[in-house]
Every structure is written in C-alpha cells, then in structure tokens.
Image (tube, rainbow, N blue to C red; front, side, top):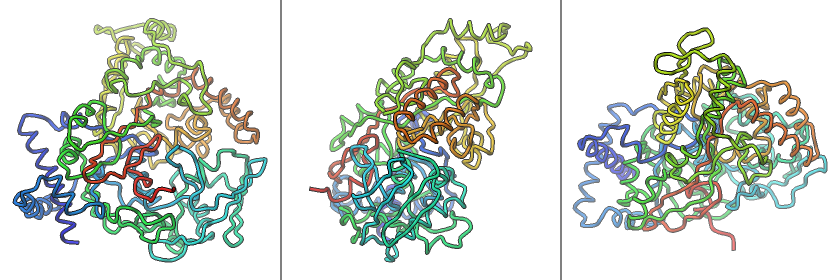
Length: 590
C-alpha cells in the first residue's frame, strides 16, 4: 500500500510541477484551464474544496522519493509506468473529487455517477450500443400490456463487496429507502412504484401509472444498495461505499485519490484490470501532460476539441470519438423579471447564434440544439423546432414589450427606465461553458441586452440554481449555464421532467417554469399507456416549450476520449459515453 500511495503522490506532484512551470512562463490559471473542459453534469455540477496546506505538503514530500526513483531508472515515464503496473494496475485520473461516490454522495454525473457505476449495479444497464439490457436480472423479464407491471428475476451468484449475497429483498428495500432520502433522481424513479412483491428471486414492480420507458429510465438507472448497510440509517450519506459492482473502493483520500479493486468473483466475469488508481487532477494542462508522458492511461470525461491536434501528434495516444448526448443549456429563471415574460425569453433566443457558438467554442464537433429540447435521432424528437437566428426580430420583440429606452452605450433600460444588467452565472472551472457564456453575452449585446458574466465555484452555482438539489427549494439567479448528461437527455419524457411544474415529476425544472397548458399535457402523458399517444403528447409539449422558451438548448457536444494505449489497449467504444466505463474492463461476451 505504501508503494501504491507513493506512486499516486508522484503523479500528483508531477501535476503540481506542470502547473508551476507553466505559471512561470507567464500563464494564468484561467489560461491553463483552456486546455481541458471540466465535464458536463448529469444531475449536479458542483465544485470541490482545495486540499489543506498540510495535505499538499505531505504529497510533495512523499512524491520526491518516487520521482527520484523514476528519474534514475533510465526509463521514460511511460515505460516505467507500464513495466511496474501492466494491466494488473492502471492509473486513470479523476477530474474532480466526488466525495465517497455512493448513490447518495456522488456529486457530478461526470465523473461521479460514471465512476459509481463501477461499484454499484442496476437491474438493467445501458450497453455499448446505447440499449437498455438485463444486467442483474434474467433475460426473460415480463412487461404487462398496460406498462404498469414489470416482472424480473434476480440472477444467482451476485455478492456485495463484503461477501454477503445480493437478494431480491435488497432490491425492494432500495426502492423504498430512496423515498426517505433527498436525492431527486432516485425519488422520481421510486415514486412511480405503487408496490413491489418479492417471491424468491422474482420481483414484481407495479406502477401507479403506465410507463413504457420504465426499464431505461428506472430499472437501468436505479443503483441497488445493501439492505444490511442502510436499514435503520436516517441519513444515507453517512454510509460507507459498499456495492455489488465489478470494483470496490478500497481507499479514498479526499481531494487526492481513490483506489478501486476488482472483484475476482464478479458474476459477469473477473475484470481485466485488478487495480484502478484514480488520482484527482483538476487542472487540464496537468492531465494532458500526464497522459502524454504515460503517467496516466486516461482520465474521466471528454477532451475539448482544441486538444485533438495535440493528442493526435503524441505517441501512443488514441482518440475514441462517439456521438454525444450530453447537453449544454442556457437557463432562464422563469420566476424572476424580466424572464417571467415568455416573450422576453423568446426574444433572446432570436439573438443567439448557435452556428457561431459551435464553430468557435466546439470547433464544429457538436450538434445544434433545438427549441424542442430533444436531440435529433431520439425517438421523441420533434422536427421543425429549430432556433432562428434573427437579431432584427429580437430587437422588434423587445421594442414591442416596452424595452425601448437605451443608455448612452446603446443598452436597453427596464420598462421603468432604469439600468438593466442581467447576470449570467457560469462555473469557473468549466472552460467550455465560460467561453460559451462570454460569446452569449456578446451576442445578446447586439440586441441591446446587457449581460454580465459572473464566474463562480461550481458549488456556488449549484446553490443558486438548484439548492439542495431540490427544485422545490427555489432558485436565485437571472441566467445560468448548465448541462445534463446522456442518461437524462435520452430518457423518454425528458421534456416533461424539465418543464413540469409538479416538482416531483418535474425534478429537472431548474428554471421554475410553469404553464397550465404544459402541465395538462404532462399529466396526460403520465397517465397514458399508449406509446403512440405518449409520443404525440411529447411532440405537443416540445412545441409549447419552443414557443415559451424556458431555456435555450445550445448544443450536444461530441464525446471524445484520449487514452494511452501503451498502458492499456482494452478500451471499448460505447455510444454516448467516453472510454472509461465498465465495458472497457469486463470480459467481452463471445
């Protein structure tokens, strides 16, 4: 364990050295961060607190010996890493600390939820083809014609990381326990379930209302937890990490590193890599240097497009690119003036030039969003809802709303003739969003709307946009940059969860949007057992959202992973996600 810790410390020290050298060349921290994108959120986009000075000192001190050993070994860094670890041990950097990464403590979708999937299983899973398939359960599951009853059979041979067997009672307990906690993601799923019956390994879910998408949006998402770990515990965040997945967390040092150990008797086969060491390297330049030099084999999340040429020119670096589903959004606080006027929000959409944003920020590697929110290619996508870029129309609408007076800079005043300065919140560690925010401010200024970009710690943005990760707690912002990752975007009814004013079913309604017409359609959608009727209702909800613009869906960025194949060549491409996922480490079915 001491040698393992020294190696991780060495990587962290090298990352710190990279920062120091670049800073000495006159580059600011902000400019360094332009080399890498902090990742999109699935449910949360919160930041991490810096490590204490004493922790940083101990890392540097212990790392010095390891760096000296490597320097005198006569091997390049990549060769030293490969010969000492091979596929028995692999180093993959985490872009940010994610607490203890349980279903109740993970912080971000990427990397938190993604890494949690290594440790906590779900009844179904999303495979490499982006399909929901049985995982913990037998292939012969049953779904009633009215989509209200789902019967599955738990597979034998599954174990918790403490060696105890996974049972159907654990599954039933999970769906009941999450309703006593505060995380909206799990509550939205479990609140649909009217009853759960267990008979041996057979589990029957009866839903209150029909849901043809319950396998993907519910059973493939809900992480199963151990009844003997959580029973009687009021606060689930206090329970240690202990799942039934392919890997268990054997060590965690906050803000510094995680260590994952493979479960050799995992029911899907022994993972191909025994130990995954995960140092937390928040700076993009340091991650880039560590990957190219062979100190790390990969890192969580996607790379930014401007890094493609650098990685393509580097030896042993392979790029894995797939279609992306994670979104980048401009949120409006629909409860606060002037955004409580639908036509004001709509006017701003005409001033947004998506082509310019995708060309300049994403370098063309993204798909434009539409006013209907749903990504093209998904089943519920509605055609004909493309945004129109027309500054003249934006100005005309603003004039008609009464925002006619302007100051000496040509910026519009409020209807009462006072200065109007709208604030746009953005996560300071997320370069892509910061660039997008600055470009949005410049575009809106052409319509006479003054916008001030305010970069804050991710956690601070969360507290203002999504306090306690509960939309019923309110919101305190004008506009904000945001994003949802693939699972949120791909689930059926995602427009409903983002716009429904019932904050249980509308758990993603971060802008507090409310429309009686939309709510009526949403209620009908939830009650319907007819797949075609639900599809038509989704189209109608999207058309209404397009007219009232509760947010702007800016783009869906391509997913691009960079991996060092000299350290590991088992990476598997999977649609809609990056290379660091469980299928890259599990035996492949023949």
